[in-house]
Amino acid sequence: FSCTVLLNVIERKPEAENRRPPVVFLHGLYGRARNLGFFQRRIAENRRTLALDLRNHGDSPHGPGDIQSMAEDVAETLRAHHAAPAAVMGHSMGGKVAMLLALEHPELVSSIVIGDMAPARTGHGQGKLALDLLQLKFPGKLNRDGANNLLATVVESQQVRDLLLQNI
Image 1 (cartoon, rainbow, N blue to C red):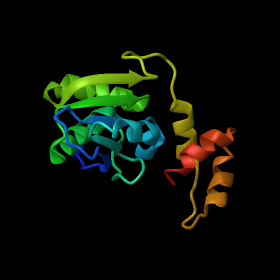
Image 2 (cartoon, rainbow, N blue to C red; image 1 turned 180 degrees about the vertical axis):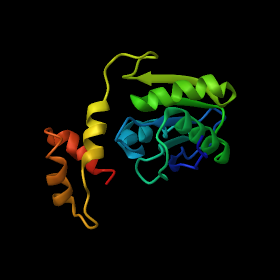
Image 3 (cartoon, rainbow, N blue to C red; image 1 turned 90 degrees about the horizontal axis):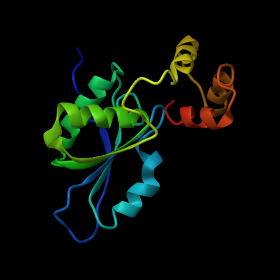
């Protein structure tokens, strides 16, 4: 069992206030709130929006990284920001978090949009990458080039390394 944490939030809203539920954005594995900034900026023209850095990502606190803990973090963060019920949009891992949030706390979710994630085990995922990353030994000091070179030992794709570098 782990304690919930309040997540880092990027909030945007329109100039004129409205009563429609806010839109909450949950990013995918190794991402961060600002990854969905294009969508957030567009929707914020008419609705209050909150993009969250999930636990262990971006500027949010670190701790056990299970989906249940992440969903509880989102629930607490929505309550703290008086943003419930919300329309929740989850991408990939954020989709899993959004689905569990809707199941465990239906009063906090007015609607849900899931992208790039099925509500069942698929046999696909990033398990091997996560295990490879756990084997890396990070030195006490590391610049971006050094981190990129270290990641290159286990991650062939520069695009994937760039995504990972956002969280180092």
